[in-house]
Length: 252
Image (tube, rainbow, N blue to C red; front, side):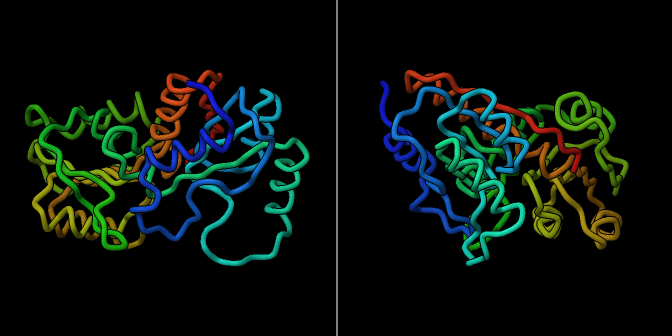
């Protein structure tokens, strides 16, 4: 099928169940551009570098995980003004999907982390705003932490932070992409051997030691690439457009 920009965004809203999910971010359409769409760029964050890359590719629509508006009223000034200026000058539409793209069971960021690790028997994990946004599951076989870290280094982040909280092989893993260091508590409570996320905080090392859990922190950006990458694929398949994932380098 093919359609207008609005039809494509409406289709994404339904696919990602925007109306069902509670979030602090504005999900769906954020900036309206030209009515037709032939080229789509997806990326993690709507920063100037990504917008410039979309301009160079003559994109009509930019779809991101981290948009420009987060539920609070702010002045249109500084970097936000510059980003909006570029979008409006080039008549590009911006759509963003925050939690809807973290928790989607097939296309989401956490589904991507589960696929990377080969987790089976997945079940919801990570309570946030009254909903589970991550997953916990089982590895196909008990696996040494070092082996999993090498997989993460190769496919996700070249220099993850590794906190080894025990010496046993890893069998049960909890994942939550992005910034969710507080969910290490839930991972400990449900008996996980490993918690994989994107950020840590001051108390994370102590929790790893005292809770006897391994923690691997692989970057907020890196753990949230798979969702927008998957969206580029499904948009190209569903609509008669060119859709491309653009990765703006960010080690954090």
